[in-house]
Image 1 (tube, one colour):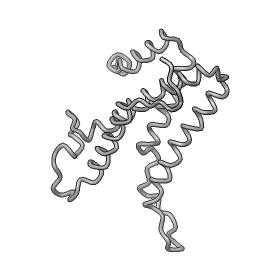
Image 2: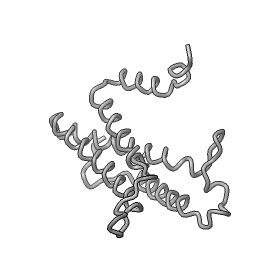
Image 3: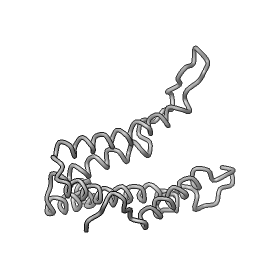
Length: 164
């Protein structure tokens, strides 16, 4: 399937927009003492709408990645140029997320410029960035069989993480 630079996958754009709307909804659920149950994270043994937002973003990144990879290989881009774009996109995901996490800790008081006591480095965008990077490396360096083996290995947590 040939995709020109002007074509977009409308269904992916709609899904991305709905996911962003869902993210805004679950992040701003109103009065936190009385929140509608699906807008909270679930207990350990279940899931709610809130718990689906991050996997939806990963799915969107994965689908968009295949179209981007298709365009780069159709153009005959050298592997070094592809890796440069991948690393640039990874940084473009990681650094703005880091700045968004730093922003609430910034104070104008001269002696309390930054308070990092509860600062989290790995936010949502910072988690998507390495997932994107490693997925692209697997896509570039492994054939179909390697991709299937990686998928099975990642999903087969029970056997990998069980105590033998």
